[in-house]
Length: 126
Image (cartoon, rainbow, N blue to C red; front, side):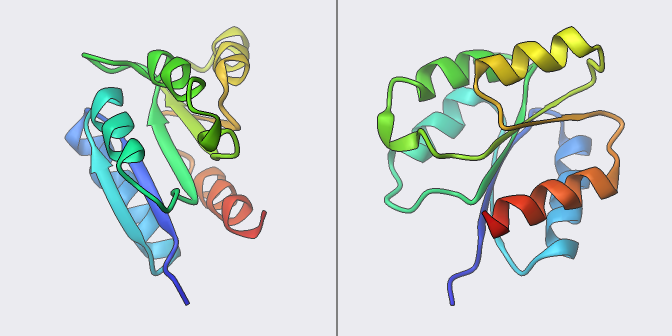
C-alpha cells in the first residue's frame, strides 16, 4: 500500500517543524516540504501522483498562498486537491477569503492539534 503524501508549504521553520511532527505522529507518510508557493507549485507540476493533502501557509514571501491557489487554478488536473490554508489570521473574513480562493479547510495558528488531525483524517478518507 502506498504511503499518503503530504505537501507542507510553510516559510517559518518553527511552524514547519510543528506541522511535520503532527503529520508524522498521525500517519506513516511521505512529507514534502517547501518554503513558498513557487517551490510548491514547481514540485506539484513535476509530479504524476498528487498529494493527499496540502498544508498551505497563506502569508509567505515570494509567492503567498493566495497566489499559489490562483496558479493552481490554471491546471485542471489539480482541481480535486485538498488544500488546507494555514494562517495566524483568525477572523471570519480571512477564513472566507481563503475558502473562496480555493482552500478546502482553514486552520489557524497557534495550531490546534485535534483540528489538524481531523483535517488529515478527512483528507485520507475522502
